Amino acid sequence: MAYSLPQEVREIVEGLHREGYGAYPVGGCVRDLVIGRAPKDWDVTTDATPEEVQKIFPESVYENEFGTVGVKTGSDDATLTIVEVTTFRKEGRYSDKRHPDEVTFAKTIDDDLSRRDFTVNALALNVAEEQEVIDPYGGRRDLKNKVIRAVGNPAERFKEDALRLVRAPRLVTELGIAEGWHIEDKTYAAIREHASLLREIAVERVRDELVRLMLGQDAAQGLRLLEELGLLQYIMPEVREGIGIDQAKHHTFTVWEHGIRSLQYAAERGFSLTVRMSALLHDVGKPRTKAGEGEAATFYNHEIVGARMTRELLTRLAFPKQFVQDVAHLVRYHLFYYNVGEVTEAGVRRFVRRAGVEYIDDLLRLREADRIGSGVPKAFPYKLRHLLYMIEKVRRDPLSVKALAVDGEAVMKTVGLVPGPRVGWILNALMEEVLDAPEKNTEELLTKRMKALAKLSDEELQEKGEKGKRQMEEFERGVEAEIKGKYRVG
Ligand code: ATP
Ligand code: MG
Image (tube, rainbow, N blue to C red):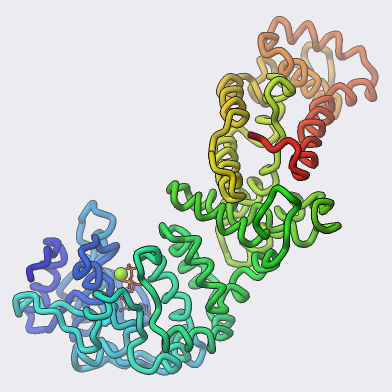
């Protein structure tokens, strides 16, 4: 069987051969070639030492202390820009459950394959021998059967490097749980038994696997699998709080089930990681805020508690600040009430201003996922479509003080003020007037208005500037009614 190897990889293998070394494409890229998928990156393993590899490929960097050299190929293809060339390795001891204590180089390709995590990843391609696949652990048979199986004794392998505990569910999720990919029984049992070893793994490594799992098409099943394997308690214990927590009547699912189903919809639609994560987490605050049971149950402030929990959880997992901010914001604002005819255009402007123009599209995607995740059949019922239409109508209106036709300088000059809180109050009051009537956003009109406003007392000014806040509260007040099932958006 001839696999199509990119020219860049072929050249690296041949370059090593020319100098008398063995060299094989290995691991995930061979796995992907065998099942006919496009590899995400390319790894080559060789008996040349890292120093020897660097000598042959001057355009390379010694990436870490584990014998890996990144060879720069100059390719524009992101999967090929750097090909990782790793010297044959033997399994070392991992006393910190993270990295081998020392790297011992192996003599043969078979030794190298023996230290790899799963049979389907313990494959190498013999380019010299007409691309024969080197497969000492039955990886191709397991690929055919869609099985992820540890190489050798599963418990030993997880004890060596506990990251493998999450790599297994990540792999089946990426490969496709719905298509029948699964973890072999003994491997599965060993993961369950040794799940707590995950605590010893650097959070960044766990996070990277979680991200890949959540970006998989079967992200929702992947999350269920993390729970079944007993791993979720060490990654996102907060999400588990929703297990068995019933919601008020119109929600037929528990909080946990609802989060998973919302994620499922977000994944099926190919939404971003930000939306997927907020779909999973949007109701994470419900268990802690639940009061009462059955139809009378309430979850006051669950979006506020949920946003705080989200922030803590994602920060603990070392997600980038901006990502944490975005997801927490979506969780915070995921509740909104909208009914055709009840909310004015100005109300929609205030809502968009408060939720943030830049978040509106994701917020609507989240709402879609939320609806479908609660078992409602149609993603975009009339009310939601109408809101969308209203948002389109107002989204280019001046929605922030920055978009006003006048600024603080102008206020100070026109009404003779020095920098201080009154300048801000006047701007806020102008903003409120423009939110009610965007056509008033001209320098001439606003200059006239600021002169009138300058005559008001501090209290009166502040009161005017807070009009929007009060109205937003009304916009959000409908939410409790919505939770009780009376006026769901849509
Ligand atoms: P993909 O590239 O699709 O993410 P992959 O299986 O190639 O999947 P990489 O992280 O690129 O994953 O690792 C390359 C190869 O290195 C794997 O296929 C596997 O053979 C080996 N490997 C990676 N991580 C481990 C580990 N923790 N323990 C043992 N072997 C590992
Ligand atoms: Mg790979």
